[in-house]
Image (cartoon, rainbow, N blue to C red):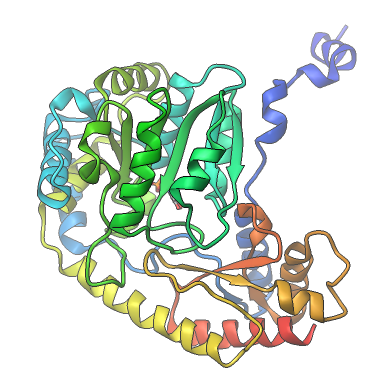
Length: 408
Ligand SMILES: Cc1ncc(COP(=O)(O)O)c(C=O)c1O
């Protein structure tokens, strides 16, 4: 008797926990895999899907990693990270954000993705809600479901969420509010006044925790740098967890190093979970992160200059396609294109419930341009493009995308 197949036949639905039904592969990775397949067949694709910098990790960071390896820095580290990396993280917050954290209020993990996921896992009770402004980074929903929670969505009437909308959206089960500015997928950046107003609304609900995802803080095209909610509302200190990392600012996505700072009890629980699952991240990545956080800033400036030029190019191309609206991204390296008018005025996608899904599939197959459907971020009828790619790809890809949308 084969026990495994017997059990499977008896309980086919019980092999995987119910909560995993909502945790699926990201459509973004599916699109990227499809592009790779096409390219392997010799088809040239203009891909506007990248969620990571198209630059290399700065040389001094790589040198620090090699030095660490040569000097035997190749062992398990403390779960929250080495003293050196924790100190570098604390100094970064003090220097760049004016935020002071004690050592027991910071930790590092395998990417900010892991620290966010840990934070949700150690705080959510079954059925607790996590409030996400639309459009939201798709990964939040999977993390919430995996932790037994339920995402709740709030759709701003304008580009960004107002205090009034936040107030109305917080329900009795709201446990967390997630704020991501500059934002993936829209590239929008909340202003100081907007953040102060959100802070007012959050003050009225002392039971709600706030996750401030600041991973794109360095990538902004405004004279002022994006503000941290915690800096503006220091009285919310016991409730705000700041997530950040080196992936985007230092082109270090593959190093898998993120960090969190916030209430010591939550950090301790996150570290306990990490101790029993993955331990501290790679010792080599931690050494590299110390070099990145403490080192020169030229690489960031150079990347931001390039992204800024590309952002302007995106807006300039968009201008010649009336009927397509793009809220100007002032940060990150994404833009959301509102194609609703183009879809409803055309014939091909007019009667489809999620026209952006069908459009992106059709666009890749016929125009060889890859972009991510807005439905992935809770925004059907929209499409996300990334400008973390060269100007020629942006110019050719975006022009073909917009022409196809308007003519479809
Ligand atoms: C909004 C947002 N937060 C967090 C992350 C995760 O970055 P990492 O896990 O590489 O630190 C990403 C990556 O795309 C992101 O877009």
